[in-house]
Amino acid sequence: MFESMEQALALLNDPQADSLQRVDAVRYLGDLGIEEAIQALVTLLEDDDYGVRWAAADALAKLGEKAAPAVLRKLLDPQTSSRAFEMAAHVFKNNGDILVRSKSEALVKALEADHTIEAMTEAGKLLGELAD
Image (tube, rainbow, N blue to C red; front, side):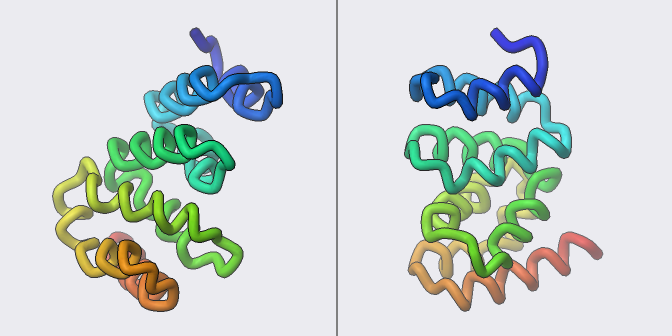
């Protein structure tokens, strides 16, 4: 359906695009798995459309460790919405990388309990661990 990342991004920003088209664009970006696509997916964790947010979280989870640092950096941003925190719980609870999934148990608990400060603390710790 898409010939390039730019085409998928354009559709995501098109106010005329319906939810299903936008979800298809998200899946395409997830399949690309490149840094620019990952950054776009992280941004979409705050999208107004729940289906788009969920698809972005699912794509990031499948990308595993490759996407984890970008999601963690998003959690450390004080401007991040509760929507993104909710979706991040899915990213780490269902992460395609078993090591990331096992290391992120405390983070997932904090995210699911809606403890923002604790989640940010755990995100910082995990980001440090993944960088090692």
